[in-house]
Image 1: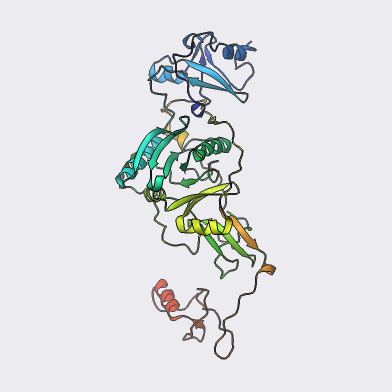
Image 2: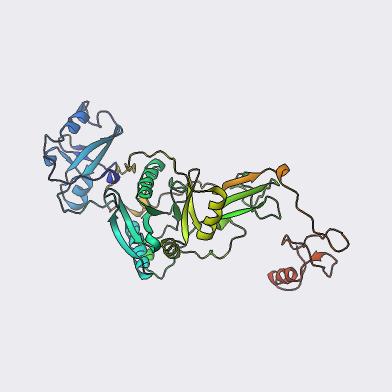
Length: 417
């Protein structure tokens, strides 16, 4: 009786609003009586209609499609892990109800066009090899790399994203999850990048660069000191009230750190989404997974990571692929922009991942450079961290090049502050 209609897959299930015509009201799927006076037992009645009552005669319809499109679209209830979901039915061949915002669609179109322009075939809304999952953009890269671009502007749970990412990884797909919210539950939960929250009209213009703000990491190692290679001790929490505060433990660390928080890595300050996607499709950027944390590494840094830590081990448990997004207010693509751009929340601190660490008393003391007479050579007073090469006009240790840089930064000859 239900076979002539197509159901939404588990990945398409949302907490959509649903209107119950006999009661003349929207159902509250979180309440035992579904929000209907005297509705005890209604839940079981509606679930038991499957296979017995035609969908169009169950009295469940979409209130948004009725109000916004003047269409009577039947809905059905399904239960997953004790949670009720309401979803649409449609006849075979009908396009599914879109849950996507214009910004979401624009990102998919932009990445697909950019990939094609750089010689990589890209398909929008392409099914995965297992036939169950659907990729927002499927990009066929070099050396049989299959890249799945997944812009994620709506709120979902970390568990749901891990399940979806696990299915894609088992299918041999390298996913790039694109978030605009710095505190989205998926940040670090899946291989991600973070880009600005831009309107669709800006995204669709290919000349407009979309900068990468997070998700691309590098490997760093060195002494945790003021003149060392580590910018901030990974064990000292970042204090948003005092962002310039620094702290060092005197030990040694090997860390994964986002490029924008790196001291030693240069050359990617202008990294854009287009460049990232093209390089990922070419194999020049590789996803990593370390102790539940995900991100991307340039290929040469990936080799350093593998040499130090071996292959990634994926031992996470996988949950059912049910999307937990709560869509009580509106189920269609007509959501206002405010529902896509949620109010900013308190941001997390740095995303540094510690690979190896030695305490200060375990670190061999660095050899102090000495001159021909055996006397220690002082460090350059301009803070480059290297032994000085000469005394300056004031008799203080420095490098000639460091003095010139300092003078240029100050607008002319002068002393360091």
